[in-house]
Amino acid sequence: MANTLTLTSLTELIYAARDKVAREAVGFIPSVLVNSSTEGVSLGGTVVSHVTAQPTLNTSYTPAMTIPAADDLTISSATMTIGQVANVRVPMTGENAKQLENTAGYEKVMNDVWGNSFRKIVNAIELHIATIAYKGSSRATGTAGTTPFASNLNPINNLRQILQDNGAPVDSGELRFVAGTAAGTALRNLTQLQKVNEAGGSDLLRRGTLLDLSGFQVRESAQVVTTTAGTGASYQTNSSGLVTDTTAIPVDTGSGTVLAGDVITFASGAGSGRNYVVGTALSGGTLSINAPGLRGAIPDNNAVTVGSAYTANLGFVRSAIELTLRPPAQPYGGDAAVDRMTLSDDVSGLVFEVAQYKGYGMGMFDITVFYQAKVWKPEFVATLMG
Image 1: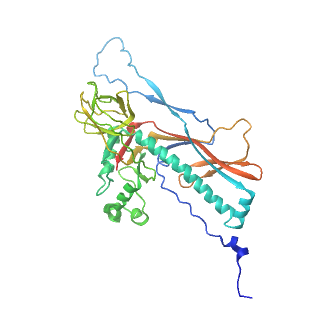
Image 2 (image 1 turned 180 degrees about the vertical axis):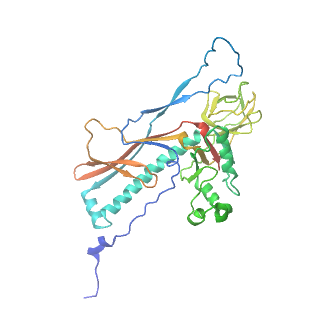
Image 3 (image 1 turned 60 degrees about the vertical axis):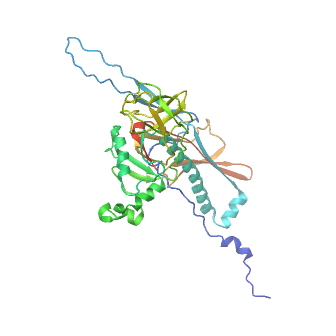
């Protein structure tokens, strides 16, 4: 008989290698205001916030025996409708569980399953925030198609100026800057941040950690959006009443589309020389730019230029953008789930509810979350184009 050691019966035991779950950079979720709870909500439910209009500034004073009437002031509301769903369902039969138990190990594999599930859900939520945020930005700086920070830190200071000019609380400790990986790499390549004596520490040099810059907490995201620009051309303003703070811009004579998130500029006027972000796409001859609107008057028949596609790196005040996250509401008495538990994602910090359902010879784990992001304060959001 040949001296052969047959390992057929031990094949299952050899399978000890464990999959390493990949995770993309998540920068928006930890940077925005997260409204999270285990209390279930309905899809299509609304969150309401108040909006206070600018008061009247009086420029005269006349003494009299009767007090003057108070000025009108409007306090309105803005709503956020919870309209996004992310769901992962993981089946499990008895045979599956036994095979995993005898090979890689049930717990090891399930940990990776949860990791991959969280990855899918978190990436969807991160992209949603990035999309809502760039379309809700006030103005932009930088050059479309050119990665910022090629030689210096000026771009982030220009970004800060937009927020400061808009009245944002730049010294509140709430400033956040979320960059795409290309901009993050450009930052790491700056020699002044690599030199310990100039950077004030070795965190970036040794560990690649992006430190705070100009009051911004700096993070990276793999979901920073590269926009698709509208095709609008040859549009001109169609009103002589476009003054400071105007957001509705009537246009005519042009052709093509102007989309939400497009960056537009004006040829002349006190409000020109700035990159305005379109909040509502061109429809019926009018487009809307986000608050605070024009920074000066724009004359009639003024050429409107639609900018090129860009990568939307974003700077903002944390409380200006909110993410609402909830599990679905359950009927009284519960549904068919036999168990519910909460699991925390250590990459994003989000907590998800996992439900276990039992069937005939098999079971299923379900993660379902309703979510929605909203820019409540466009004045406190600005774009650094790349």
